[in-house]
Image (cartoon, rainbow, N blue to C red; front, side):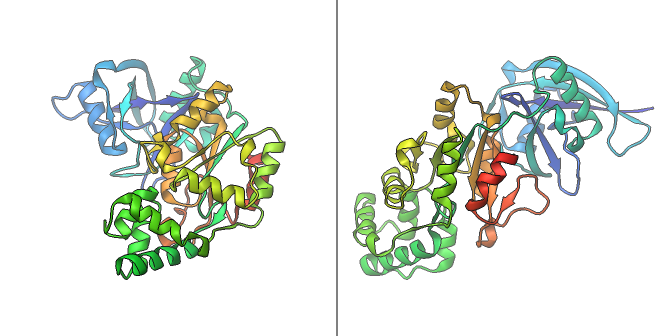
Length: 349
């Protein structure tokens, strides 16, 4: 019988294993690959993980976890041997090269997996390292703009007026689209072409903000209140500045005093699509005994989705009218028409 000898990276967050799916394939596998001639296991695994997921594993902490053999996926008569190593990593996990999608699995997700990955997950579950079943969600974090509040249309007009009135700049929709979703201060610096110090650009922006107010997305306040009444922890992670987010939420009647936290771009050194943007609120949740596998992020953009999955969270997408943020066809996280549907979906998650 032919043997394929491969290495695999074991990355477990809160009892769930990171797996990846290549373009054109349906099954998920454990990230890794084959050694090249002359490579040791640590160097080969580091290269494969960097190519597939754009992160650097810490080679001096690499440790053997298990070795598993199974029939190679889609190759009858061929065995694949997976030598599996655990290692810490540096950077933000992002599908790269041939990888189209990542997700996090427990033993009950075996229907998603290749034969080899299924066996690895089962072995990890037998060791108590991976959960047998996915836990019930206990926390939900929301994006703000175009998830809880209508933002893009009115704020694009706002930015265009600021750029025209204060700096003589004719902002195109292409320019707005390229900058949209960046941290607020970085976004206005790009849109207004660094025409003044950032404090002045922010002040100019806010001087006419009352003429361009965000509005509630229908059912958003009700959704947040319903989740809180069920005992779910609720927070907000947004790319706008915290004081603006709090002001909008309070003006629109959201129960901000009941929220776990409201984190704007000014409260974190990391920003979406970097999954480390959730670190502070995940730390607060950990203090309440709630882990990443029990936490869902709700957003409307690919940056939201990428950050959530990189952090080991589940994700619920809200349909976006920006082509760049259209949900990837066939990807696992569900997409809902509106935030008003989240409370129902959360109960079924």
